[in-house]
Image 1: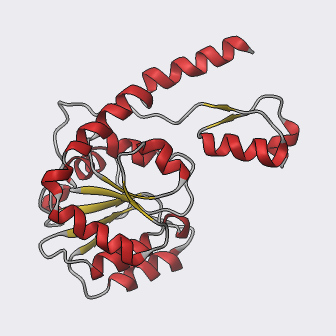
Image 2 (image 1 turned 180 degrees about the vertical axis):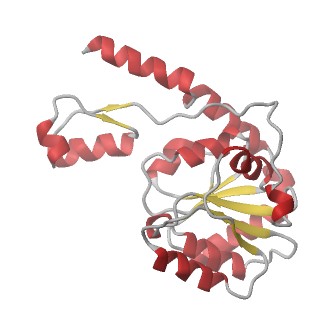
Length: 231
């Protein structure tokens, strides 16, 4: 309400947010999305995979804050139900403000050696995890326009994503879609990616090209400059 009533010019990162302000506050906003830098092709892998005994191409990756809106708990439940022998689920993230929720996630994974918590990752560790996962998982109920999704796409990853407007806006038609908060469908899609990876590999290049064409800082920064000059 304060944003809508007190500011003359409003930028939002997604069309979903632009539509929200128009419908609820009759405010016209401008969409300029978030952005990422493309990966450095010369970057060397860190030793995070060997540290946690993870094999390249044999793990699903969750990367983000450990909060309920992003549904890592549903992902853990789904992975435990999936026919994913030989694969792991890597949960890369933290939340020092809600240690009880983090403890809940660890409890859900208790007894499984195939669910790995790395804590928050940065730099080469993050890049290495993104580069070598079989699929990136973003099963959120709510997102703005997730930078982690664009990062995964920039590494040419297949993405299992909740079918919400912001993820659709990011991935276009290239996601492996699941309803938010639906363990059974999420389980099915994990199995689907494992069984059909060869047939799904074309999504890797599509995701890479979509980021290059729409969500790099070179492109997005120009949109900011054009907007400022129009004020």
